[in-house]
Length: 79
Image 1 (cartoon, helix red, strand yellow):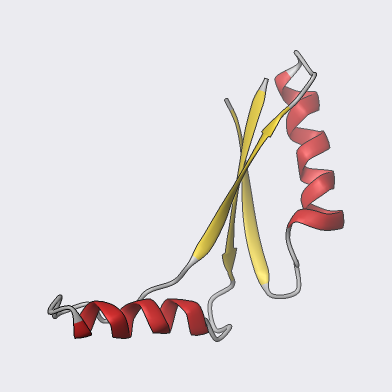
Image 2: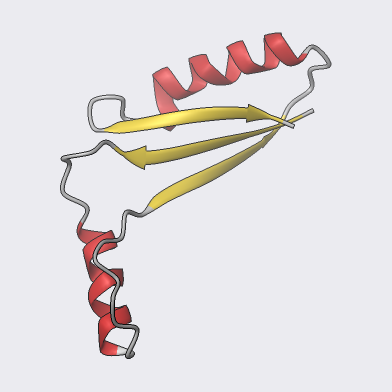
């Protein structure tokens, strides 16, 4: 079973990488981009057949390691 985790900085947290991408897009002539927020996607291959249990395990992983819950939000997708 696979799980996909989407991690994004919470609203209000400064995103220097997103700002760098926004600036670079402007330099490349892509006008009209008013904001960019950058995040990450983590894909996990799990030895689990129960989707609910997999989601619970991955949520625990997020809380302990995969996301900094002080400044980041996350969502878990079991696929």
